[in-house]
Length: 126
Image 1 (cartoon, rainbow, N blue to C red):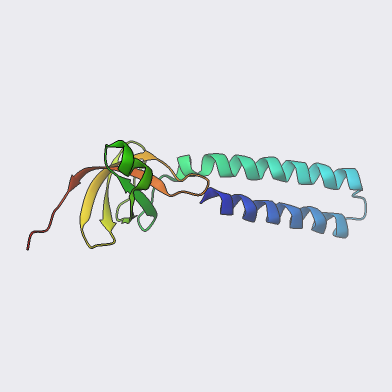
Image 2: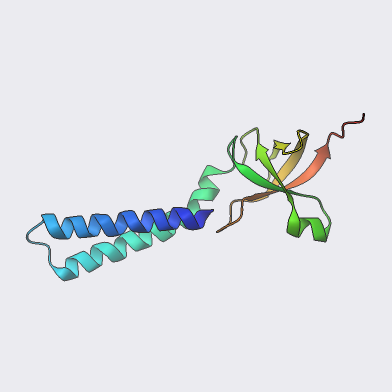
């Protein structure tokens, strides 16, 4: 998920650099490249540290896993119903309608949602 954030930030950086080059008459090609390099570093920094600052917010898609090895790779997709940061407990609504409580293990990866380990799952019995 962070990959899209990086691409958006780098496009904004390129646009600002080119706009500054076009509008400011005293700005040369080297100044434009320096501005582009600075924007790239800022884009990488924001992409790397933003999930740690933000945490998991209500409404975010998360991957719910159990403690065993095989489901940890696959996981079920759910939606966080409460906010939290590592290693806090949050509530997650699964796609089948059940609600689980889990611990935040990792934040959003480059292309994957945050990983939540289940500690309590309410099973509905017919």
